[in-house]
Length: 178
Image (cartoon, rainbow, N blue to C red; front, side, top):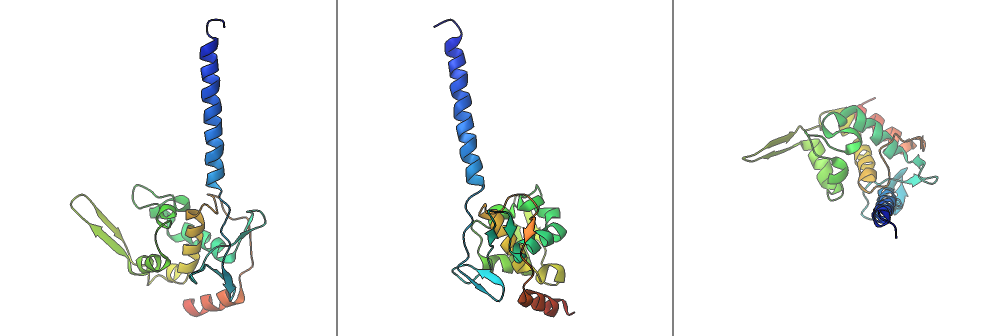
């Protein structure tokens, strides 16, 4: 071998390893979406009966709650929690939190607020139970953030979406008092 060729081979090997690792990471970021266990009154539900997402058309179309949750999140939550649930220096990444946070604990936190105070930090999330723009759409927010947490939906605005089911429209009217 000529002088310099082993170094070129090492660079090529490192480049190939990096490319392979990047490809694996990209595939992991877009996991196959979980399928809902059942539907009820226009909502998709998981095996525990909690609302969940439904991604269809090869990942291009979302259910109504995921779409609405995206819109509500960016209207009410992203100021503190960052775009797409990615977090900020001010508040945690909800797309990470929902990997372990239960549906009931999510609802409790959103509606009643949360305060973690210790010697090094003072984290406070206000209660949103009195804010109809949040309280009436807590399931929508959960479904959107759960899709983000499960890597079923990326950091983009949903393009296609299902129509709003009549049962969801009626519940919305009842909650908003219209």
